[in-house]
Length: 482
Ligand code: DUC
Ligand code: ZN
Ligand code: ZN
Image (cartoon, rainbow, N blue to C red; front, side, top):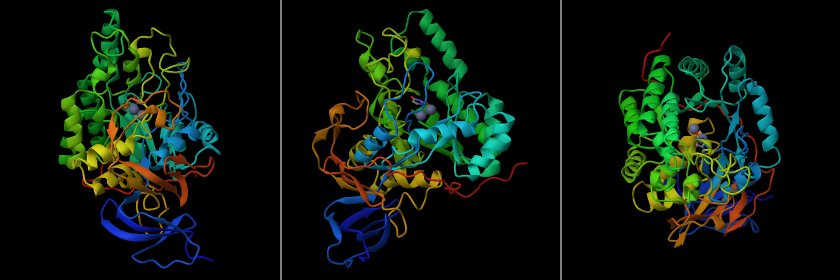
């Protein structure tokens, strides 16, 4: 029997820490050897990566797949099309959400979500929990049990009527996370400010998609971010502020980090590549592009894009996720599920981005010199694995790690076209944006899922991952609270 199933020769590897040249020996889906001039038996499959970057597969720590909606819309991507699209863009692990509806047990939500994933995923996956109804039973029994079983992260919302928690509920959930070592992701926007602004805009007849941005200005995000940070300080627990859109929330996070609080930040491609103008301009009567780009928090302006880039560069952000939330533009379950003349507040929030996340950041971050290759790996893979307890099985090129790898083509001259993507959405908000890097090969546990422009994934190859408790990225810096 051969020592390796596959050897990748002449790999120019980057991890979050190092850049090195090696041959990579893979056996039974894992990396078993890293050496120069690795000997292999005759007939062993080989791939020559000479001249190319070989990186850990991307881990998308925040995406929505087949998440049930209650407004007549339906997510366009399930685990089949979502993981296909992810693999074609170099992502080898996804973390979508098992969402609890108010009145539902968390266990039910988890079981339902397992049914949705079963037999469909072509790459590995795990779930965050969305906690929308923190009853005493959820807090005292369900969450601790689920954390022990490997569901170690949950998302909470400070807005959206069907999901939002009040301040006391936020604190209660943070306290459970602290007691059991889990990670909480916080959607930070002030719900009452949004409701007040929305009411005024609609009363004035301002219903077009562009008013979405005016209903959720940066102060709404800043206030909720500050409040979430204060609660995390009170409880003495780390939290991750997700999908941070611009300067005002970034200032809050930077302040907290500077004061020794364990506050982490996530941002997404929509805050680097879209602006509020993409929601539509004053003189526009065709609202289609605007509806396509409605997401929350909304994209801001050019100056804020630069502030987000600066935050990636300087380390305010630990993770870069897609927040893929796939709704078609056409069709009865898409962006206009509530009717062709639906006002902005009735348009489902979210943009697709699983497949374009890595090529966009590689092209406009690494190849422009804004971030280095190790930062790219950290933001898109390693830190995500550490944050959610998947490291070192995922997120590295190391002996014993899963052979989730990407080989990159750079120096390309292409633009993003929805026609070339593999999701089930009929548009991409990034249409026409140039990219000069794209993975030429994606391996999921040693199996080719994407090669030379062709998808080779198999539904059911993807495995559910039980997460360990997250690896703290920084030592505890504050005294224990009662
Ligand atoms: N905002 C969210 O909070 N979730 C999905 C998509 C979005 O825009
Ligand atoms: Zn959110
Ligand atoms: Zn989201």
